[in-house]
Amino acid sequence: MPSIIDGRRTVEADRDTVTVFLIGMRINNPLAVRSWLPAVRAMPRILSHLEQDPASGLLGYHSWLGRTTMLVSYRRNAEDLTRFASDPDAPHAPAWRAFNRSVAATGNVGVWHETYTATAQNSEAIYVNMPSFGLAGAIGGIPVGQGSHTWKQRMKSAK
Image (tube, rainbow, N blue to C red; front, side):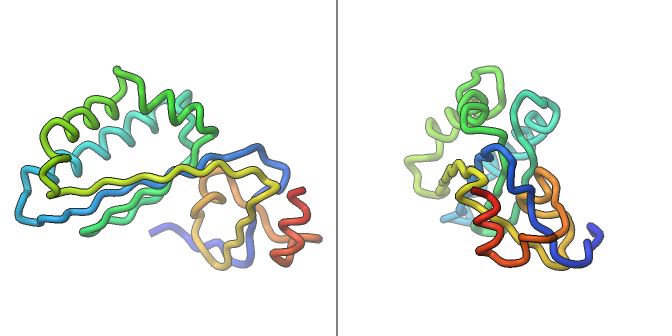
């Protein structure tokens, strides 16, 4: 279990942009194991590949498992994400092709993703008595200090 970092923390206000990528899968038919198991098995291979390749731009991620599974990842930029997704030698493209070829039309599994690019000027973060998590876990957290105690101050300091 990750250790708790006491107190209030935020992220650096003068950071570059960060791309937040949410991806998930929903098992619509739990009995159709042959439909959803390949998708479940693909994600660990993809994450392992990203973790081993610093050029991929992956900064960090968190995942939640269940009938609807979700992974939130933080990337250096959207270009890195796009390059990885379309790389024929990376594990994403073959997994996506296999899904579309054999599973997508069945309706047994649903997949989704959302991508957001956030600048310091239009984002802020706060963590209280949390382990290293979220954007702070990806790029590093800092203690809340002078001029960053409130949401309004943190948003203003980002500008």
